[in-house]
Length: 141
Ligand SMILES: [Ca+2]
Image (cartoon, rainbow, N blue to C red; front, side, top):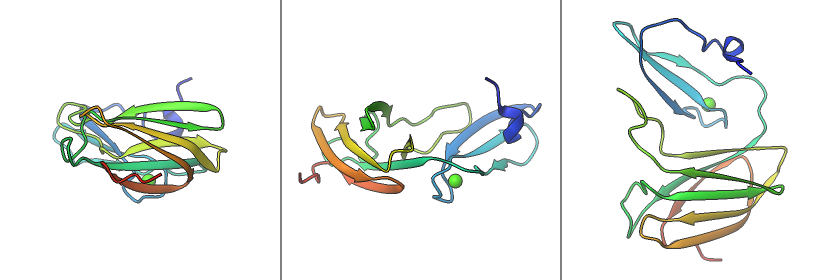
């Protein structure tokens, strides 16, 4: 279902790039649009949202920005997988901080991180609605 008109993001413009990030750290993703010959536009995520978890990874043996790391989050019997990427679009890039929407789940049962070096780390019982910084090799569980 196309709901872009509800968010104001159904704009007819000469777009050059879009970046996604939670700029104000409120758990709602925000969009920055870059169009030809105009100023950039910020579309701030508004309205109600479910629970969420954001993970910022730092590699030690892997590259510092953890590019290529794959994270799987399991909450309320559902799993989601994200990969740390850079250079996601033309003239733009999104935040490398991974965002997981959790709906009604108050906590994450398990977070599995597969670092670019192949190392695997697992965290469990993580409360929702926070941004965690995880350093490779720093998990102690
Ligand atoms: Ca936000």
